[in-house]
Amino acid sequence: MLTVESIDLFYGASQALRKVSVGATKGKVTCVLGRNGVGKTSLLRAIVGHQPVAAGKITWEDEDITRAPAYQRARRGIAFVPQGREIFPLLTVEENLRTGFAPLPRSLKHVPEEVFELFPVLKDMLGRRGGDLSGGQQQQLAIARALVTRPRLMVLDEPTEGIQPSIIKDIEHVIRRLAARGDMAIILVEQYFEFARDLADTFAVLDRGEIVAEGDAGQLVKDDVRRHLTV
Image (cartoon, rainbow, N blue to C red; front, side, top):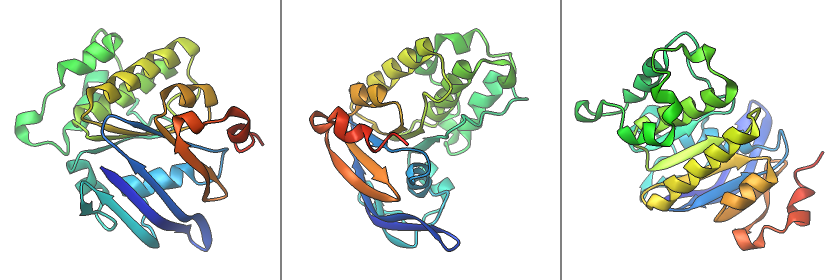
């Protein structure tokens, strides 16, 4: 569904990505691994349209979206769960979910019941402000908000960051269930090796803005990958 081909990305004179290529497929989880500052978030920002690329090509469902703005990519079914969650702290849980209506036609502007099946805790907190939720609950809300847009590609940036172990397990179950539906591709940026290993169908390891290892999950050899994750 998604093909990223040899993209370069700059912030001013600083090059964040060098000839990076990755892909994502329906029903599969692609994990992007690497330590802090190697370009993982820059890659996701390029995919969802938050940062322009200087070279290369991004294709989504056989359409070149390299220069398409972020809102058009959202309308095409690309959803982003950013690092740090970025929910609206002064809005209620229900209002946060409703912000996901923005790219949808009028007929789809409602919260799918599946959201509450995946995250039942949110149904009991619809009237609470987002800022009053725990970190784990905010992460669940951020994923739920993305699901409201009915994505066909879900892009998640370090969803386990700062989350208690019990919620990490819940998020792992949700990602696995979404992939098993077979109609959504998932790209997951992660530093937590075990979490990525358990979910990945394919993986890519970034170091200094370049892909240094990639392959199927069966090739995720712990020692080889860990040396790119440790400082």
